[in-house]
Length: 384
Image 1 (tube, one colour):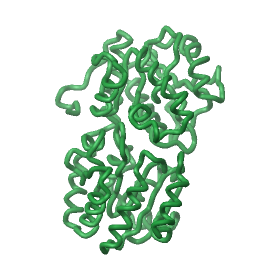
Image 2: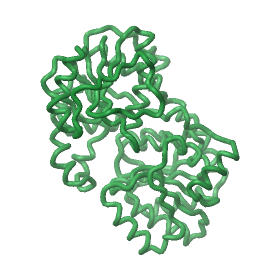
Image 3: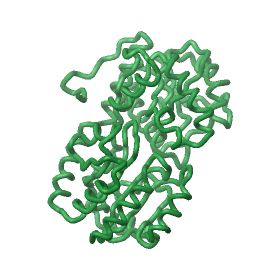
Image 4: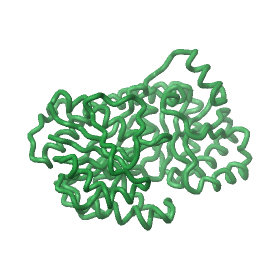
């Protein structure tokens, strides 16, 4: 089987979808080598990966174009036919028309449908219809959680048999780290306070950060001594958040690091006392699993995929209830024993997800849409 794989999100400074793409690509590379398949990365521009790709993975370096959406619609179909792909996987909600290759698309969530106000106009006008077309014409659609699958079925009228759930996982570097030299180096590099709550993700409206700031101020007024560190790139409509921080008088105790390289993130998770992720909506919520894999106790929302992924291993609250979020912060900040319980539960929960399993499940899916038999995971190994 010759597999074409979408590398368009493998850019410097990437975030969630880019790392989903890289982890999946690196683990697929191991699986295809042993199974005798071919793996070809296609992209509109040169790709960037944290680790070099294995030699048996080919990168198609012709027919490039600077604009990803334009390349996807005008050139990607020709690229797939030129490499004679049996199946092509596009990892970010869009795919090309006009190709003989079977097509798989990952649609991470339906936030453009559910929460259009949380996206800039360009995404609503251009991306939303292209995602709808991809959902309609793909031979298989991948959802990253059961919650996301339910949303896809509700809003896109896809036959249920065409939508498969294949989970994400934390990367191998996300684990408990006891090395005090690493701790000191990362603390100094980012000016991290001695005790802090942590948020990781883009700074944008869907992440519910204004409500987190209000809950954090209320928690401080109730005696919480921790500061708050927000790690992530500045996204759409982030200026309003900084004004809110100033209005609440939190400038000295809320720290924004901006984008942090992936290699530094595990130590930051390890340094935090509590990870807080009250996002309004997620298709999976990768930072929650990353925090759990590092042994950091988690507070997250009880909605969308987040309650599904947390599965009793985190404190969950209504993301619209500022008082409930405040109470959770106050409770965990003061209760070391509860933090230890959630840390242990989180570590166990994170181990239920792995990129190796994800790659095996994805390869089996490619085989189904391409008409090639690929060994399946045993029921004992499959994630329930």
